[in-house]
Image 1 (cartoon, one colour):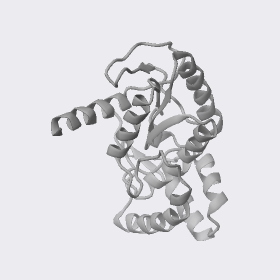
Image 2 (cartoon, rainbow, N blue to C red):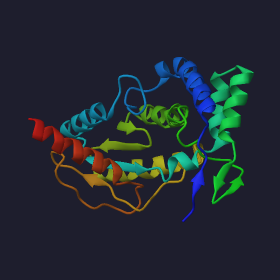
Image 3 (cartoon, rainbow, N blue to C red):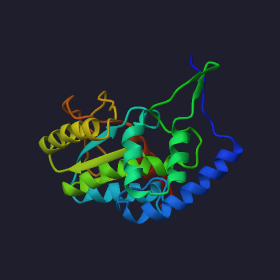
Image 4 (cartoon, helix red, strand yellow):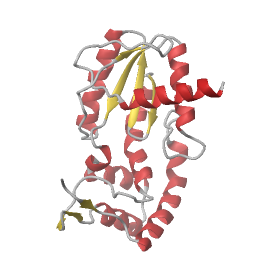
Length: 225
């Protein structure tokens, strides 16, 4: 078992929080409507509400995407290039690059890091949204119904054929454009009132995490009613 440590110090956390607050003013208004994670006035409850609306509107064949070990797999070159396009302050850019590439301690030894975002950093949620906003905009460009909460997201379609086609296309987009690995050991779901699941082809990249979020909050809502 590997012991990994790359936690920021108290001073670093203070600086990262300050940078995050400044960057948020540049990015928040440009993020897409159906991104619900780590954003002001967005939360998992609103994400589930939108997911249920999609299902009730007839989009019952769902592709769930699992971004395998997302926070450990973020490609620094891709992320930094996106930040360079919007942020022009050399000091801020230098700090972000330094934080991203700070060595990580594994089993007592320091290792250079070329991918991943710092664990426990106040800046990491914003950095993840900056990267995955590229995905959100691609889904919007394709006029797809989707819900994303951090690195978990689902795409809602009206047929198994469409789900398979969309799943494979987004699989290629994530690998080619964002250099993100995807867990293909999962399934597509067919929902009837959010209650039934059916196995589908092995081709579409899918995950079970969103199933868990959806079922948990649906049950909780029914108890409250």
